[in-house]
Length: 274
Image 1 (cartoon, rainbow, N blue to C red):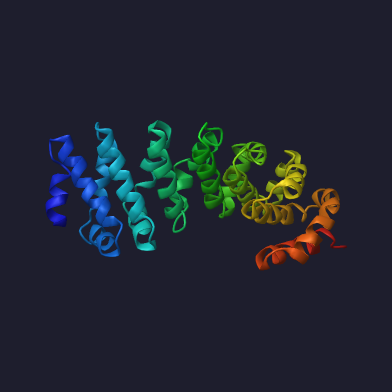
Image 2 (image 1 turned 180 degrees about the vertical axis):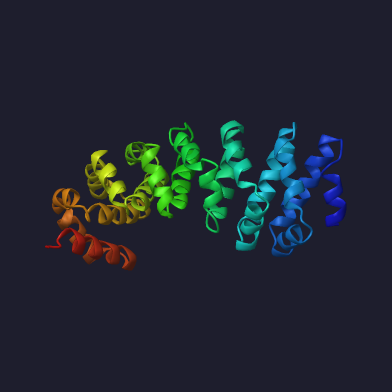
């Protein structure tokens, strides 16, 4: 069946191409289907439909590739097919529905490789999407900035493209998912001295303190505390963050196991004396 579907992906009829990718998408939702897509080298033929003039065919091709990316082998297969640059480019032109699929695909692919994404200027593209009108895209873009920011070079790029001030603004976003991902991205970037300095300068300390005291979402609070811990390693950040220690002590005594752990770590960093 895989060989027949591979042939149909290049059919002259747009409906045939769409339905062929739909079948492959359904197959990709099962382990045996994902394995077959990799075994028969179908990722490249499927990705050829990223440029199809029929939106339904494009959408289904992205759904299939995104589904394959959920496994390490699948994500590695997409990276090996050198599709990351093409996916990043699609974030500039595609529909919002497809943009979300691309952001999810890149999220999984960057777990196995961030170099291709960084080379494709993904940091710049992700940053441009932080101001998108759709909260799902804002949140996924912030999450992907966190993903790509683990290597040192990526943290430097984040500072260079000025994504930190935008992330700080998103700490006040109306949707909790966006706030959580923005805090997570700041945490990742602020590991470096330069990232700390830029975050503090952009008002991250004040925004994070306010969020910790007012936000009810555990996901938001967890990432906020982690970001606070990073910024407390800088003397100027630590001085400001002493005001939040009572709140952290309360969380350390009453929160869940993970929340207690990160709160205690934050307290130790803030109250450290040289």
